Image 1 (cartoon, rainbow, N blue to C red):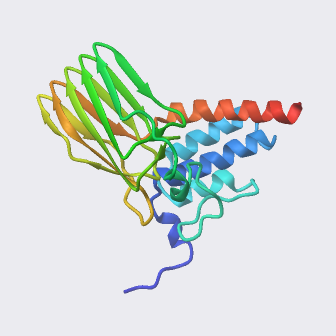
Image 2 (image 1 turned 60 degrees about the horizontal axis):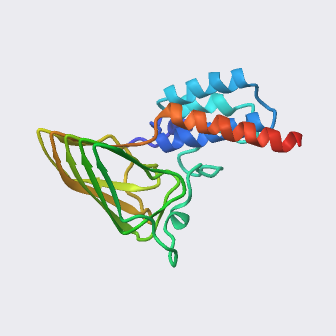
Image 3 (image 1 turned 180 degrees about the horizontal axis):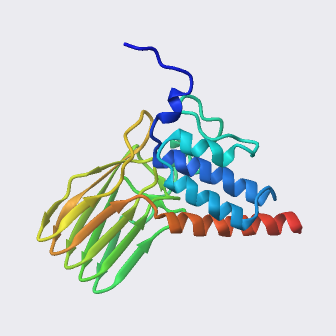
Length: 224
């Protein structure tokens, strides 16, 4: 077996979490006045199109923090650490989300109980876990969808297990994250009849829109 040569790590393929780390560096750089908005957008396009660490390295070459290294990343991930995701001794949020010919949305900094029931009958339910806190290391979201849809956004620091059953419907898992020690687990199960359950990471446009909002707020604080 040949020894790994210097620079071989740059050919390693990157994950969504790696891309988000670099995107956070770029947003921070713009908030500090190091990048203009046009430069930020151009570099973000390069980040989300990147396939390997070699593609990421030039994006932050002229910034204080460099692109992530597969062995020891020198910066924090934009999402909360696993230890901060699970909280104890707090009052959990609603134990169910029911939409019958209507819609229900759970998002923001809400506290998810260990078991959450979702019912969508000719209606829609949106569950956003990006800024949520969990009350247990293992959480179950039980879904029943009949002529309805359930959309669940899951950040990279949560491990997902999807094992629901669909009849003329489907449970679709679009997450690409892998389990890691210490990460909380969210199991999504249930039954979908002529309905759909979609589990996926946040869309790029949503992330960029929220980051731009945060950047504007930071700049206002600096100017004030």
